[in-house]
Length: 122
Image (cartoon, rainbow, N blue to C red):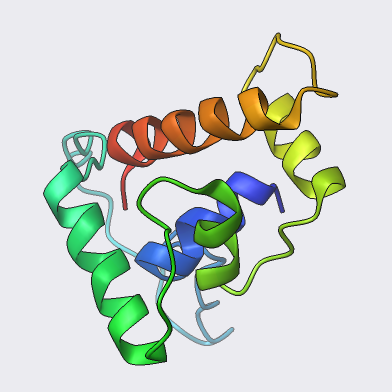
């Protein structure tokens, strides 16, 4: 699983697209019906994301700067916040800057993760 996927799952829960349960072998075949309309892409507002993160922080009772720090955000979610993981996350999200400049990369990462959470949502 991607690091961003792990972040998303830690905030919104496991993906509902997990493998569906198989029907028993003796179950009747499903009746063909008109296809369901395509679901709108799931999105989350920044307020919804903030509320979920605040609830996670409150449940852990730990003070952190997850609102601006990618390291604190990853730690809050129980994820490895090492430089190698942050560099991998930067590659996943299309960072084109110098990964040796971790301060600049970290600022970009936090901003990009929050934007991606809002557009890719729950």
